[in-house]
Length: 112
Image 1 (cartoon, rainbow, N blue to C red):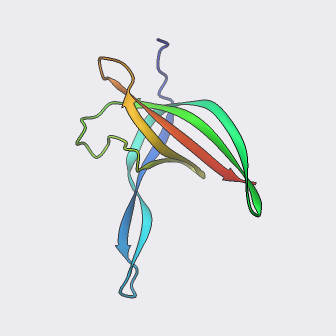
Image 2: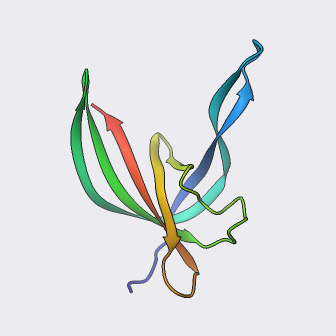
């Protein structure tokens, strides 16, 4: 296996329900903290979503492992943010048998 270069600071976000001030609730993305990561681009595709074209790119994001109950451990319902770029987490698994790193399969989507 190649060495890991954790050179990008990503913000881990989770969707939470919050009061909207009018008696109801709204969902918003809340930052849980920052993680240093290695981001490797994978396959991409383009699809038509009326009235625009949407570009989807898969990425493999590697981060340091955390215990399964730790809030800093990414989950498939969360996302990473790097400025204006958003990486939706689709799956998370250990990188190797030692469990020192996690690989997150993510999808970045951008409208054009």
